Image: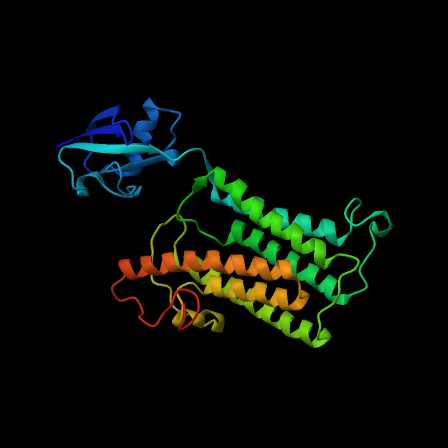
Length: 308
């Protein structure tokens, strides 16, 4: 069997970092990363990006050496992705924060609203309902992170946790401050508005969970297999007929319901920012589906049926 030689250069300086000889033709990029780590322990596999061109795309861990457009002496270019942290850790941190922070305002702990309001309770039912909905949402997210989600990538850059936590924790504190404020004014249309908003919130939460379960069942444990998601017998998944990322559609719907329920400007702004970001993600995933699957359903839009 003919073996390969693999030369790994720094993508920026073109300095030779490592030379591997007698590499098996069936070796994957993941295995080459492990070999590279032996000579450079500071760059563990999750920090490594190996590519065929200094400015090209990163090779996938599952790519096989002999199937790449290289000769028996392959040159790969290395980029350091920086310190990494697991997706699970990031999600648990960014979701646990809002849950805890909101409750601080709900229970009106000292130094937030003034001494005379310490540990007092709001007389408005909607305030207590909002706390239940907000807590339920983030408890659901925490449980999904632990028991439902299957991540195609094990890690993400460490710097992202600070950006993500600033977003989630900051907005949680901002909306909680006004919703739980002693001078908070209930929605204009009273109980009718609250009931409508609660119905929207609950339906969208159930829909979001249903989509997450459908996506989980689509990918076997430990696999990076990608398939076209289709509706199941669960009616909440029928939105797959019209959009590529119905989990984002339901997520935005949940926050719109919460904004209507509380009639709070920070919640509306959080919904708008979230919708903007999820639209970007949805468009990216939609493009990936179209590129990867020739038979991808043409009627689907990224996030909003028939529009966007």
